[in-house]
Image (cartoon, rainbow, N blue to C red; front, side, top):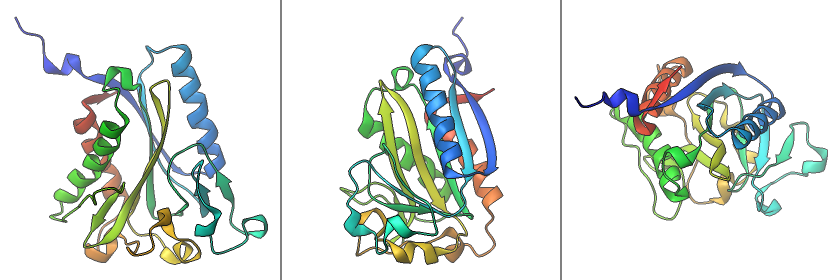
Length: 219
């Protein structure tokens, strides 16, 4: 008798955290990663949340992409260990931090990035929105507007940081930076294309598609 395909799926802990400070979520990720480095048998985890306004830079981000003095900013600015350039988080943007052990999935960072993009593209497909990749870049675009950004860190094949989807945020905060170091492609929101869309609706879709793409079962 063949085993059920569900038995081959990884277990994943889902945490919907609401709006929490960036530093709090960052410390939570570090703790979850360290636990999995000590015990590789622990389940995968997906954190879904929003942040109060904050700017974050990747480990090698260029300060030239910031249009203000980060030492005298009313909005927090953090340099993190993720890849990628500067970005902005704020309410109305859904942020996902997957803590996955890629030894149980595929030990390939390019594969992982493309899978994160696939989750977002699958969500957009449900709304008949043409989510696109752009060769050489990371993220998802709709009609040349970047609606989702991705930046990751992987330590001994355990992932942290992740993706953000602009659903209905105030985009003014992006005016103070060159998001992801890309000058010729504007940042957009899903609300531009779907005026009635809600963050809660997209959160549920992301939860569903993430499990499908990564073959996970929530516990």
